[in-house]
Length: 125
Image 1 (cartoon, rainbow, N blue to C red):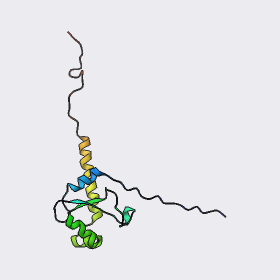
Image 2: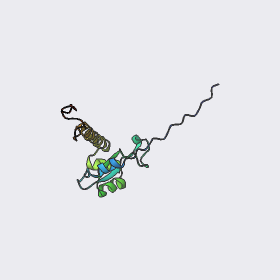
Image 3: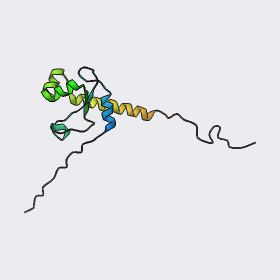
């Protein structure tokens, strides 16, 4: 008879990014447009459940009031009340950030010409 080995599932890695959190904090609350703070969107799809802070990339901007309203009332009630799909909003924010960063990378860098540049001739008269 073959022995069955226990297969261990690795814990999901929680990604941290101060830069992305700063980006989210520059945005306005999704509900009222006041100054926002980063709310970590948890849940079963995050791989950690609702009780654990998820990846910094799974965040949305909410003002202080709406952030704690979501925590107090629960995600489902909050989303129904304001007609929000937090996962779709989170994905849209990530897409917007990627497009923004790609545009920055695609811009040619302006600077001085390389030494010996110009007409390409180094000959002296």
